[in-house]
Image (cartoon, rainbow, N blue to C red):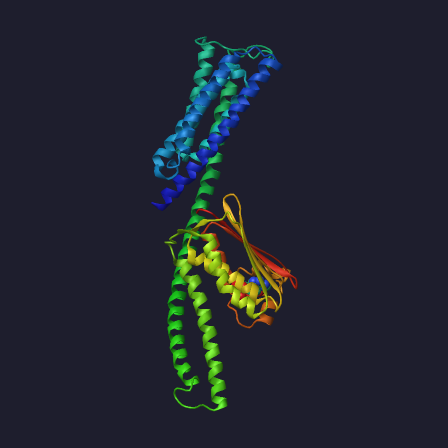
Length: 443
Ligand code: ADP
């Protein structure tokens, strides 16, 4: 079922491309007729040729309406999509036959343009379908040549191009027909073979991708279970240590107290780490991602209240600038808050005492841009590309700050990307760092 759905989607995409291509072809036809008629002055029934172009415009508009409607992309089945592709190719072949008829019939070298339709048919249709269209094209061609040969319909001689009319030259007709028929069938055979291989490869890639996603999900579920159990045990260990260090269970000597306080500090940092791991894993598995519409300035206000005391502790100048026009945004409030908070907390953490950290929120047309800047230790250039990877911590950050999970930015990146936004960083070691987040106003 999934396979059929994705195949249908692919054909639909290609039909859209085909329709766009046809608009170009129509322009080409009109241009070519104009040049042949007005500039080279070949005696052709220009009006009839323009008439075919009008016919093309009409049915291309009709097909555009059918496939560019929003619901057409997903709601129609494979049979419907295939029928559309067949109908378009059949009409194109008919139009080309008329164009050829009005411009010299068998004398017109453009008869070989039928090959393009054969290639398109091989891409869009099954191999059988493409051979069927090739047979139809050959029938149209032979029928046209026969009618002109018998004089049942007019022949428009392409005289300046050929020395004399060829529509009754039996041997010429025979040889062109043999070449024409074999060319069309060979073209379909070759193009559909390549197309079949590509479709097969596409399917295999899709399968591999699904398998990878499934494995990733199983891994995440495993990590979630393990971290959850570890967290529970760690909390118990901490709740056992606390009363002892606080002297509730009796007086401790200095050595005992020192050891227990170290154990308490380590378990606290482990809990912090496990919580971060739980956070990122939960989000990976969270399929629902329920968004809400909330006040963005209020969220910034909450973040500011959280960060200001930390900045004050390090004597860091912390400034916030929010465009007055900014009001509401769509998203998962708690996730966005955590992400911005994390980046700001990093800015404070990796900026020496007396430094500067700023947050600026600007209104772009369809999105908001958040810029978080500091003049701290910066990120070495060769490590910049890795800072959003899970567990990655830059060398200078590790030297300066032992505590850290390397998960904060990975979580933020995942949050922003699930909101269809972008996050990127600019930094110079020893000079400072700027993080940018662009979030769409509506998802
Ligand atoms: P953590 O801060 O716990 O190490 P993060 O995922 O939040 O993990 O950040 C990853 C790494 O990115 C950090 O270890 C640090 O090397 C670098 N980094 C992030 N923010 C800054 C910043 N404002 N200044 C310098 N380095 C930073």
